[in-house]
Amino acid sequence: MNALSASPLPFASRMASLRPSAIREILKTTESPDVISFAGGLPAAEFFPCEEIRAAADAVLQSDGPGALQYGITEGYGPLREWAAGHLRETVGLEVPPSQILITHGSQQGLDLLGKVLIDPGDTVIVESPAYLGALQAFQAYQANVVGIPADEEGLRADLLAETLAQVGPRPKFLYLIPNFQNPTGTSMSVRRRREIARLAREHDLLVVEDDPYGRLRYSGEESPALGALPDAGDWAYLGTASKILAPGLRVAWLATSHRGLYEKLVTGKQSCDLHTSTLNQRIVWQAVSQTAWLDSHIRRIRQAYGARRDAMLRTLEMHLPKGAHWTHPDGGLFLWVTLPGAVDTIELLRQAGSCKVAFVPGAPFWVGNVPKNTLRLNFSHAAEPLIEEGIARLGLLVARS
Image 1 (cartoon, rainbow, N blue to C red):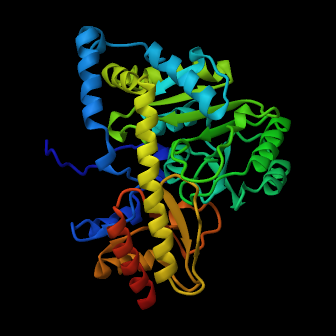
Image 2: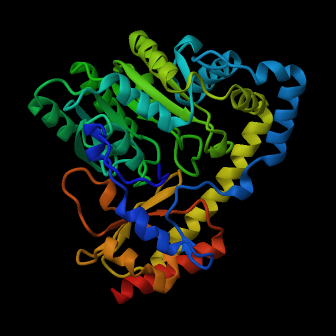
């Protein structure tokens, strides 16, 4: 049989909602080495702790190589789960035992597992709008009815959440949020707003799913507790990751929840998916993060560099974008969000971006419901400051031509 056969196959009906991204196809045209890209959500590779990861791998293999290369339990490596429990308590105030922490193959798998065990076709999931595209894709894969609620400078609007909860039919399956340095906007939810949303969720018996991949990457402002750590909190699930503090290629993350029944279903769902996250990678991550003094120093170094890159981008946007444009001023994370004058279509702008050798992500795919055409997301962590300055100058020229 022809290895490239195009004969029809009876794909699952849910695949109808999963289509290749038109934005990604356009971005392929901006991949040449002379293009300055602010498109990907990429950490800066020059800060990956390669020597420390090598040393951690050596230590793991020397201390128990056969164990590190063997199958493991689905829940994850015990010492890493214990570390995660302490980490959550110290950084965001969550009190959760290691027995309710699941080690996942990246946070994206955690989102997929939540969809797998909670969403039936047609079930409602509430998100902030704009929302993280990977989460939207994960939930839509299970044929969710995704309802977007607008946000302001304090985060998802609690008044509109209350209105939505009063109007929707069956109880939504969960509320999905990125309260710290949200992707794509970079905004953070105020403590006051967190309290309002936690109280509303508890009153409506609504599970809160808090995704916190960027929480340790704060460059200004004060730390905030997780929603699940607040006195008014009901049931919650929380996703954290080693991708932003160590390296994304390790694909090690953790999913914690207050709900024992949910945890058991998540473990069962993961068993049928991949049995367990890489035993070797889990032990390498544990070996690295358990060196507390080194980890704190490493995170400070990342914060200093990314904070300077954020400042360079904010400063250069002021110089080069036209009157009427405005953008967020994130206290951390990897992204900021630009709104251009109303007549500018950023998808069309990206089609023209090759001429100016600059790339970004148009905002349209992140919106749920009403889709403004004049927004875009910029990543500031990946490019060094001189490239940021040159790239934003190119973006300004591109916008001026549109």
